[in-house]
Length: 274
Image (cartoon, rainbow, N blue to C red):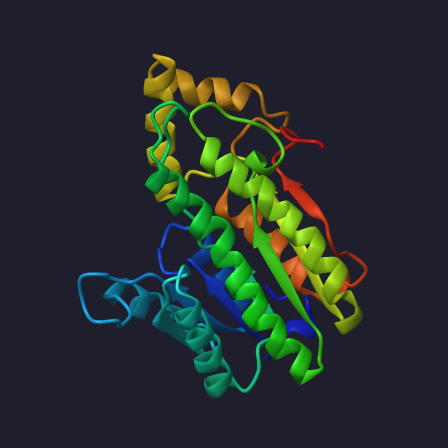
């Protein structure tokens, strides 16, 4: 059900949007409900030709079935030329970009600091921070040239505000993402570009399910006990859902949030409050 009529007809790029159970696709569905045309960008199959995977194509078809235009694009967020090509292709197809959702990230390289390799550290920081910088830079340049303002929403994490064992690279990257959000908000405000971050607590996406199993094993407890302990520390009594983050994203993209920029919004059921 549409809540923000000002979003109808706008265009959004959502990075990391090509997985059915992921946060990216949930945000794509939510924005599509508001009539937003969607660019679903994801890594695709690195072993095949640089074409969208069958899953990406199927997800784009679902969005089109909901009455909006959807374009699946393969993009390696570490490649500056590929990021620029993604933006150029989106502009050529839709005419403009109004919204960028920086959702692509790496959250599966979890190790103690003393065991993490430099390559693993660089991979996490590269995708989670460099990739956001590249996309923000390319889209902001377009938005400034177009002159119509825009919205940039960075998907951070509870790990942007609190530390977690075995997640040094991930936590560092998400803390850095909040810093990048604040600087971008200061620099781009004069162009009427609002830049905010969303900090969800744990969401059981496909990646989230792997994280549950990993951290339960690290803690030496059963998966059921680990999940029960998670629920017990969340004031609202449950972990986050994809729709919780998606609803926050739609709000931040709408005119209802026009006086918000540089914020790192907690969507955590009360688990994170600073």
